[in-house]
Image: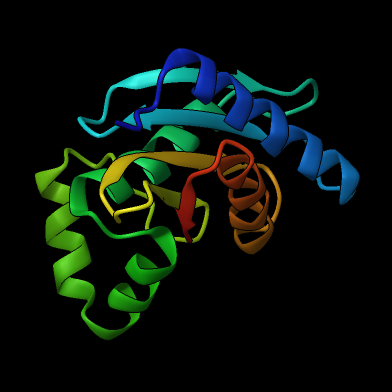
Length: 142
């Protein structure tokens, strides 16, 4: 059974950061959460602002708790802002509904957790996360 072990989480982070550097992105911060929203691992690159843990966590946490990636959350916010506002309140404000909160799925489509990336544009954050997730043989839902 696939899971988000600490080893896999660290590999996801390493490959996400490598993808960001290869694309000349600004310094990234990356968090990996398991399916229950628990932190598996986090890293913040040199030069990233100190508040990036909270942003990365909120991107990932909102995604895994709603079962909805950041891109879908953003779309939902544009169409039904009241839902995203209510969901954010229900999650204690721990939600940033933009790309960069990426669901991690196994081959059967089961959500194993999420990755939150912040530091560059939201779309670039999501693209870097996708590289990291796919590097461990899992599927990224951006």
